[in-house]
Length: 566
Image (cartoon, rainbow, N blue to C red):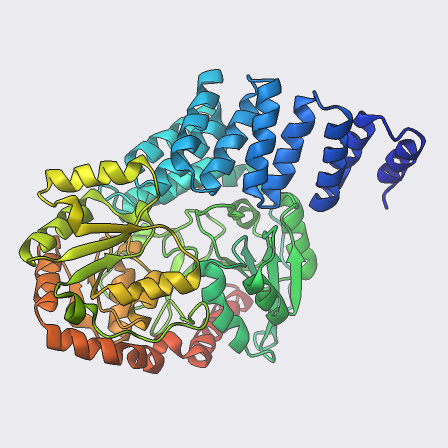
């Protein structure tokens, strides 16, 4: 127990009815990441001072940290009832509502925060995240730009802006690189003075200390995709360190922690302190698993705490950071002839696949082809709604027009957005009875949804990754468009690895033609349904030992380069 905590507890023992003492204790506990204890202290403060808006507000903050969003909403609403003009509370209410999927309410709360303070960067950033979830990417991008304009040092909002650019066809790889370079100039360069010389042992053949940095060591595509690699790492060659930003551990977190020789909980560490921890651990190869996604620690990489740094898995793109030396790819994500100057890093193509797939649990059996029972073809896309661009919707509507009686099944948030999407389809000649929506689901019911789908449609310009693997695992072939950015070539990579290169299109028109042709070939659909799971099992996508050897060979190669002074 620290001195300050001990002093406050003694004061509380002498004056247990003083709410401000409980409030101070809660603040100390929060700063140490002891959220459950902090919650109890804040609740005690609120009970002693029931008219304290600050106490209820802080109860809501801690509940949000604990991912108890429903309770957090109630606490924030109590605080606002006492003091309506709290802009931070209004914004945190919007965030909690968004996490609950109450997106229309989240937008309303976010706009109330901006009405109170129009140049409030956090509210702009949060509203942008909600718009992104709703697929309103242009509006999201505008909100992120407003956030960055209001607070030029707001690194996370700037990262969100870069990520959103990947979802719009008007931004090519060079435009995304330029924005990523601006991120580095704004948020990385001010930290360059903290870069220090590395005196790691330059033995090229010794066991390597490899550090993985992520806030997604959990039930998330990053966590699921990392499990096979960590299970099959050669412990004689690789010593694994996981720097985890996860605040609430789940079953995947526990599995990953059990596979790492060293697990560091770093959510409460500042970027500077985390960089110092990595130096103390003397990491040889440091791997970012986020890129410009939520809760990334790219500022840590800007301080170059390890001699070799690379990015992988968050999504296949570029960081723009001077100190990020390498990025993983594969021969299909960046095929021969690709202009690699659109990446700030050197590209390392893994020999076969960027992904190593393992189902997120015990998967249901593959069902018979639903079209045979239904009498119509059901196309489906279970990717997040934010990936569904206007260009993709136009192509899908053309497919529905050409395949008589066909239906479309999609994931979409509940709320006004569905009605707006129906309107968009109606303007393109598709009636609402031909489209069905499902909400985001837990893993098993999500996988069972594929029992209703005959043909998968990969979105573009940002295609699927693990979702595409899930689709194929459930016996559903996928039509994919090979795009102009690496995130638009994920489907290409996966289909090539399962021997379905003939389902890859190179223009929207060809994409439509391939979908229509496949939908009209029920015998082939039936055969694919029976064979795709075994194709996956036999492919490089599910050969975890081979994938681990490929990754380890890449680590060894870049380590040798550093040892040689490259």
